[in-house]
Image (spheres, rainbow, N blue to C red):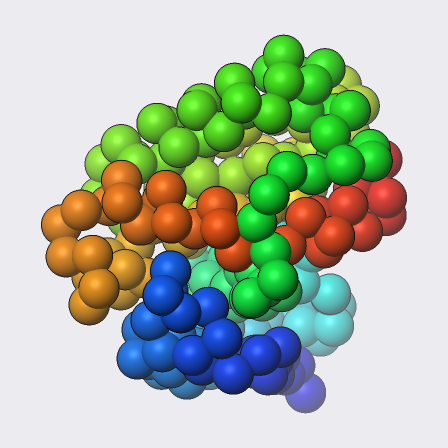
Length: 206
Ligand code: MN3
């Protein structure tokens, strides 16, 4: 049967303090991420076997092959499942700073430098209307990285892009500590970005 499993957090709930608080991490992972996982599995039970057996990345880039009656549920919960599965390891208590290697080169080519990228990512993600994610993504068609803001749980894969680094700006991701001050959460998040993980993701696709 089609089953996706909630991944473990790669660190303790309080590991990203003070930037992201322990209670937010616990609720976000054990309740929100678990709900996306369970609802994805429930939606896949209504799909044919060839759709059920797709790995999550291919499922999200092949939504037209999902039966129309459950496509919306697969888009939302499948996106929620994978986005959060990518989110946890893209942060680390030893994160922050600036990328090196190929990520630094790709960002320089696309944005003119890390400072310009950070400013663009922060401003655009802080101002997403309602719920969504800001992403650094790789475009196979242009062999370059780009910024994309996605609504709700829509995956960059639904636009033919490969997600490299995403920031969740749903209120559940920050409200306990930051309340309505989303820009403060975005600014703090840079202190925990795990650039080694981003580098590994780029090396697999670029
Ligand atoms: Mn979330």
